[in-house]
Length: 76
Image (cartoon, helix red, strand yellow):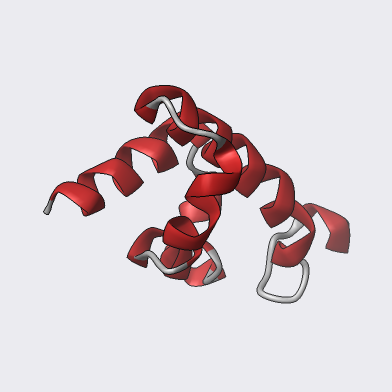
């Protein structure tokens, strides 16, 4: 198996920007806001902390799943 096929803490940073952008678009769509408005809250969230840690495997989740997790975290 190629090294590029394995996600690890070092190469996780390659997939996170697009995953985060798509997640923020979904969050903004659901909440009726602008994705840019959602950036500070998302980056301060527990969901983001889990997403940036390869061991949690949150990077496997779809943007819709990450959106749901984030919105649940806001509600309580």
